[in-house]
Amino acid sequence: MGRSEELSEFQRGTVVGCYLCKKSVREISAMLNLPRSTVSAVILKWKRGGITTALPRSGRPHKLKEEDRQVLERVALEKCLPSIKALTAEFQSASGASVSSTTVRRELHEMGFRGRVSSYGKPKGVPKVAKKQVDVSRLDLRIGRVVTAQQLPDTDGLFVEQIDVGEAFPRTVVSELSQHIPVEQMQNRMVVLLCNVRPVETRGIVNQAMLMCASSQDKLEILDPPNGAIPGDRVTFQQFPGEPDKELNPKQKVWEQVQPDLRTDSQGVATYKGAAFEVAGKGVCKAQTMSDCEIK
Image 1 (cartoon, rainbow, N blue to C red):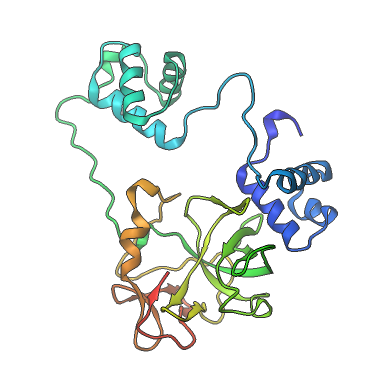
Image 2: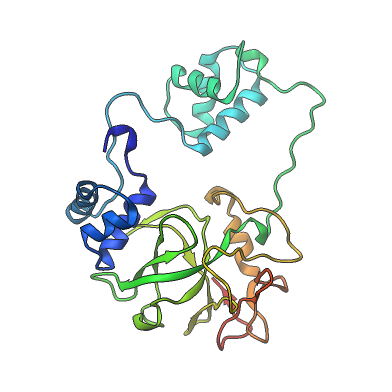
């Protein structure tokens, strides 16, 4: 695989997750449509160093991260600075990123900025865009099916699961469930998954989603989807319409603001501010026995 086709962190995490679930190199290669040599290289890197991320390359640097691009756009539009050098200095101060004026100019060009830097500012009279409201509609909650589950080696409480959410590849999920649920009960189980959390590494594995569970101080239950739900079905809330964020920005703390209002009601139905977790035309999501408990 050439440099232009390097695997994403998502794909690398999926390879390692499949390996930990006892899949062979041949099986992983066929399932993910990747060369066996690539699969072997990812697994070897993980075994040696516990990492799956690609090491930095020489040559032309990567483009800015999406959040840094947003900062750059805001600086360009709001500051009306006299030169690309001044804009670069202001952007570095605002974002903490260390980039050259050439990189900044290239990124601005790709965003559609043209002409003098001083002309980038918004014309007078253009209203500011209202901030997006923080509620449960910003969470990408979907139904999933656990394809495989395995206790993570050298841990007491962690499972690593491969979960089908209706995408081309299953998602790798690391969860602290083994002290509450036998691994046999995880196989082929239908679950509710938060899919737009930012991927993070846990014990060298890229965790790509989060299982939704009813929780108390001494007990935990996975939420059950309604009968007839299939992988990829969206969980929606009648009183809170809207499309979820592509990825939750940790700086905005959307999950931290929404989570305190996620609870099971007296019948065990999962709710947000009284609105049920609902799969259109199929029913609501519930906990088996836990009522009046938080969901996380």
